[in-house]
Length: 349
Image (cartoon, rainbow, N blue to C red; front, side, top):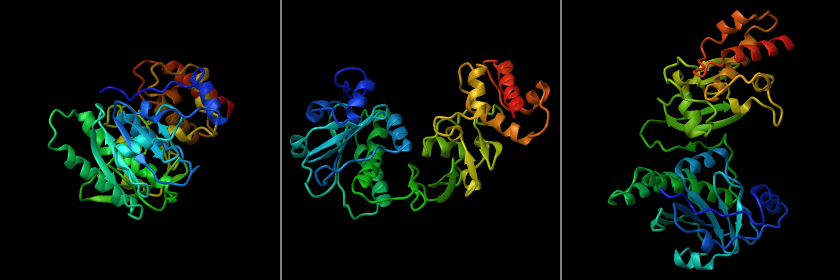
């Protein structure tokens, strides 16, 4: 599938364009020219002049990144172009697009375009409707709309089915309806009859998911929350790539069900650093060049953090480090550097 159209940053490279945008100097792009090809989700958002749309969460960006779709939030006086890998870009007024898709000026409207620019789904949303119900209905309606179509690729089907859910969540934010993560569950792509609300404390933040009881903690982190630093390796609890900390103790998240860890403190590699300050183990891995391809590195780092906590105040020689880290495999063979990194942190502490 062809990627969405690319907008070049004005007057220079991306960093310069981002600086201009932050300073309010970035000239709005012509949406009629920018929005071509596909796949696209157009979110027509009635709102007061000058209203702003916040940048989507990491989970939404991960969803957009996986689908390969771009999102345009359009208002009568302008709009915002959102791509997973780029900063939000302002758009100029688009009366032609509003007229072309028949978007009413007083109600939010979703339009899904396929990779050929054809409309695959058009829906006018009730602003007073419950967002969770609206997302679920959008998924079902999109699936029914695409069912009779022939020669629809798997990726295109996923884009057209799930992109309305992403856009509806952004529309909810545009409407100014606050929705805390601890108040409503995140509606996932699962639509089976046995869904369970599970509250997880991830990196200090309470997140509520509505998932099947069989979903592993690894899949919940990667697929539902977009925390892809936790890696899926063997999926059998043998390689350690999926290691996370639960109440400070290391576990293989591929062997743990998400529902078993409700209310417990879960730390992933994304929550280890404090802002720009790396955790001492992360810094030691960089200093000792304790990785090559990097796939196993998040699990190695979290396992080392737990090992140092378990053996706090005790001497750690190389044999003890190798034994303590034996549950984490490195297929690149960076073991000597990994041992040196852990030994260095143990010596400083």
